Length: 339
Figure (tube, rainbow, N blue to C red):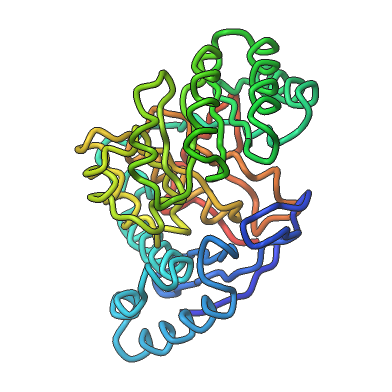
């Protein structure tokens, strides 16, 4: 087991809960004889720090020498170092799929989808700029547009959504991600106005701990999706509170594809639709998420079309976006070959 540092510059700065970043730093987890690769790319505010990720992987490397990589994976804690666990979990899954001579999607499921629908994120801008970006995305084949909200007033954000709906027409779906920025009163006002614009769901309108508040927002004409909440709340708590219609899962944040797959399957049984997204990951983790979404045959658009947020990547992308979908590499394994 080798740990290789990687640093990927972003094409434009990214605002996060921990501040603005201009590059993604992390590690490749490389297994040999037989081979397997994984990616551990911690994101401040969402996962452990870069230093904690490195320390966890170094500890896992020591354990792997004595007891093997499976024992090393057991030593990692998703609650403490989810990015590190994701990296090793993915490397092991890639190895096993390669050994089986199957794509990762086929290794995970008997009849995976051949491609995955993905959304375009148009970010936060003026109504005119947001509408132009949304129109460009729809012209490129995207059937779902995601808007960032919460940095402006409710009135301004509703105006942006209204401009987008006018620009793209009634067909494409619109999602709004508030990143926990609204109060209950503001969220109710926003959702009541967004319902008339046929917004499919609002993502994390309230702080992550406010499950009762999210529950009170359901049934107003716009579905409620939870993202940040899954870091602090269990799926059982979310279900008991009847707080969500959709669960947004980030493999790097949850702790690996095994964890996400288990959560997604359980969410489905509880009547909650799963959607997968990235944390602006490199091509190894991003492509693995495509395989995972395909193994779950997720029909809602996933937030995996993030390659353009990187100015450079780890290797050639085997799953580019075409007409709003990402095709699953035929394999074996993830289908990413390091340069």
